[in-house]
Structure formats: structure tokens, C-alpha cells
Image 1: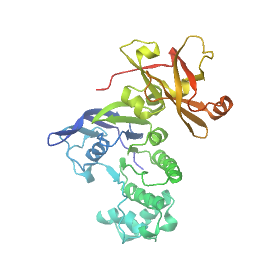
Image 2 (image 1 turned 90 degrees about the vertical axis):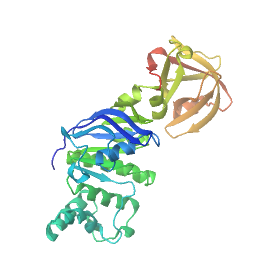
Image 3 (image 1 turned 30 degrees about the vertical axis):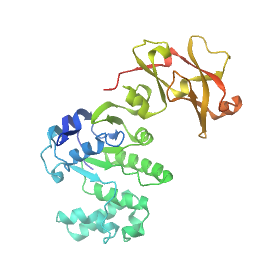
Image 4 (image 1 turned 45 degrees about the vertical axis):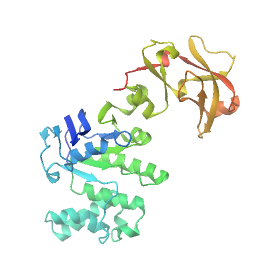
Length: 341
């Protein structure tokens, strides 16, 4: 397989009339990497993906792949392939014929394209189902065939539009592993649109968090989680509490975040750690999540404040809804945030 180059978006903008869907974004995606475009519905991530693919025109800015400006090229000339959310398999063609279709359009001979199609079906562990029609396959199997069909053109960059959204949770995890394996083995870049924070964290070398057509943060997943760049990122990624600096014992004009698992909880009036800041609250709700229990606290100065406790500690303490508690934290665990735009 050939190696794709770096992808760079420079001032990339998309307008629909007076509506600016993507607002002059700049990002560099290293070669041979797995990048996830992450954000809520309507943030511009799918529009960005479609501009890279050539399925949407660029209003302003440039798309560079391997140093070459492809902004005005037809999709087939960009070295990209796109796997659509709906899979879009031809219902009247079997698996092998679906995978071989683009090779047929390029004039490859019948025996050669059959051999190549089987090679790529084997890559996604679907060669034993080569003669089946799409209607005879499960959702996960259809996805594998669609993936083989996208890869058979040997793209430099594979573009994936929410490819796991239609799968059940168990299969979604299995396919995450498969996608990561394939990206590593093929040595090409994957750009994957998702609204799932867990999916992006599990897959990506680079997470690009988008909001309202802009990039809020582009960084490795651990950095995005440990050091969210803004209030929006901290809240969207989850697992963080956002507070005003005044409540946290910091600059009153600032906003700060603290991970939910870095907050200590004790019954009201109990001892708190040396050098800690604290807030009195009541337990408003409890969710048991297996390894963890998530407790939502209610206090006038707190908004959507949660504490994550290991299950062993939660059951040992025996916390109950309605109890008065003290939430405390160390200043060294706080992370200062930039204001949202």
C-alpha cells in the first residue's frame, strides 16, 4: 500500500448563502494518522469532510494533500475515498461485485478485479461471504463490505462519515478495533467524523473538536481530556466540572475545570484534605455505571457538578440521594479555561 501525505486545511470556509457553515478553519493532520472530527450536530464537521472529498465546493481557503492543493480537483483526482454513513451498497450486486465496481469503471479486467476484490474482502474478514447480496448481511457485515469497497481504490486518505452510528454498542466497539487495525496496517490517513466522545478518544491520534463552524481544539486525545482548551470543550468531552474561578479559589474573572474523578466527597461536617477548596452540597442523583458511580450534586453556586467514585468506595461509603455532603478538590487539579467565543 502507498503512503499518503500530510493533510492541511488553510482558512477553509464554506458558505451557503449568508450562512457560514465552516469558518476559516486551519488544521494540519500528520501523514499516516487517525484523525477524528468531533462535535455536536451542525458544528460543520461533515461539511468539512465533504469539502476534503470534493463533494462540496470550497467557498474560501485551500485543501492540501501531500503538499498538493486539491481544492479544485474532482473527487476521483484527489487520492481520497469516502465511506458514507448509509454504506450505499448496490442491492443487486453481491459483495465481490460491490467491491470490484470501481475497478470495473476504471477498465480493469474481470479476473484481475475479482482477485483484487477478494483480497480486500479478506482484509476485512468478509471473503467467505463474497457471493452474498447486501440484504443477506448484517449491519456490521455491510459496513465491512463498504469499507473494502472504499479501500480497493488504494486511496491516500480514507474519509469516514459516522461509520459506526448504525451499529449496536457491542459491534461498535469491535469495529473500532478493526478500523484502528486497518489504518495502522495500510499506512494511510483516516479522517473520521463522529459525535461520540468515546469513539474519538478510542480511535484518534488527533482529535479536532468543532463548534459552530470553528475548531475549538486540535490535539491528541489525552491532551484534549486532560487540558480542554475552552469551556465548550470541557463540557462537550465530559468528565469535567466547569466552575467560576471565585468558587474554585482562583481568579474570580476566570473559568476553571476539574475532572469529576479528582473531586473528593465526604459527609457534611467531615474532614477535608489539607489545602483543599470545598463546597457544601446535596446529592441530587446517583447513577451506578459498573466500575464507577456518578453522583450529581446540587448547590446554588454549582451547575451540572458531578463526582465520579470507584464502585468499591461508593458502596463502602453508602452515599444516598438527598444527603448533605462536602465536595473538595486541590488547586493543583484545576485547569484554567479560555472563554467560549
